[in-house]
Length: 179
Image (cartoon, rainbow, N blue to C red):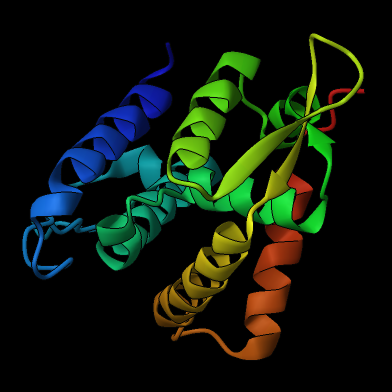
């Protein structure tokens, strides 16, 4: 498994394990410092991928501090948004959209189903289910969206609205089309 995915899985596991015990979501999380004084970064300072990864680590730390108390990771939040915006989406299609293995989506769905946020509905094919948010899932998603919006505003506060739009457009150009 690539190191990046391993790091993310470890962080998600720590967040899930710590969430019920937390009183303040920011008090117990380690801080991430993208630049440490006295360290020579050499060629790393010239690499786009390294800069994106360092920004991602910083953003993920803030996301975890903001939403960890809800046991929501970026992947789980994205899954809820996709299902909410695409009622009836299949598990297989959700896995494709998320860029993760179908087994990973099944684990996410199982978790949401147990929490009463999502339900599987028969699609007519015994091997496939259509996914729908429950009323509680819709309610919780709205709460999560507010927290994520606050998080996003905080991590991008140094950028103007135009710069935020430009950054999203530029990052989109970095996505490699497999076709």
